Length: 421
Image 1 (cartoon, rainbow, N blue to C red):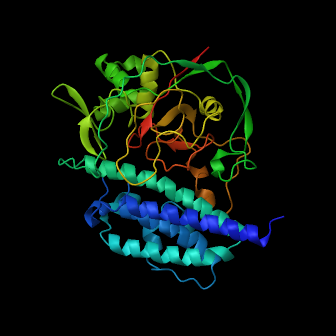
Image 2 (cartoon, rainbow, N blue to C red):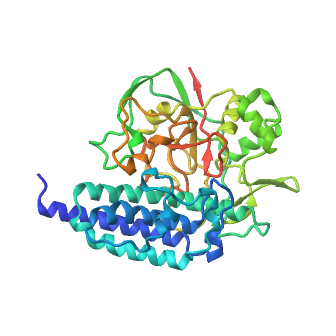
Image 3 (cartoon, one colour):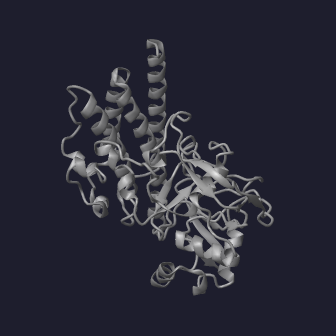
């Protein structure tokens, strides 16, 4: 039975976590001007200040409005602007037009954040366990938006011919190009998949219920595909050979004249890439990133392999530390780094799987508006696993399911191969 001291300790720990998450978001936008934080470069991306305001709206709406008696909204006009997709919360500003919102300013949104933070921290010790669970959900929700904020900023800056760096990159230290992929025998037979709520403190609803999957004999690559290996795919005509592509993928390649990963350009015969630290030569030893599911599947076909299922991936990754690897610890330039050796399943790049994003047996969405968080998106998308260099450390776990449409590649997405035995 929990004592009052236990309750106070848990509340204090949650307050510290909330404050740390909120502070990181503010640090990430520190280098941006109001104009930088306002622009929207494509429908899939959102302005930086919208991310800041939306995550604040989440806490204000589902915590302060719904659980704190007498709370008054910071600005009653703003929920229309900063609701994302919650139908239960009513009408909202159209997603493709978020970049048209020159007002409120970045400074006003930062004041909004400060006001909501102060109100929530003051109320937190008296919140019910159910409301405190929503605070934890809100922290993970904001961590998702921290990664989106970084990748959206990268895309915004990539379309500017100046190709400005947002942060200075670390000095480049030559690293030996990894040798050939080594194959690891995968888990075979019945495997327990999904979140075990009794043994981990948090999981999104789409990670459960825990259930059993039958895994057939297979092997997984001990690392993800490198830039050097991808350059060989390009040189061998991989983007010009329809035999390796799914029909929808081949149509996408032709319609969009795709010939390399996003942000790659060949200059004077040398492949370069644009990153948060500006344009630099492609590092052949680093994991390839910013590739779509279509590209990942075509590369796997060219390599005589396939993409792993999400169940094969999870069964293997469950043996590894989810807090290891190259993940986001602080504001600054982030990019995938060459592997130090040995199998690594977390960090650097999200890994495409061959699994459609669909509900697990027995899945039920939560009651209320927060039930719209994941379940209604289980159509037409593919699962990615493992987190990336832009994923806040402590946010992912073996059961974590990210998901995107097969053509999308502005996230830090990469490839791990699998093969049948």
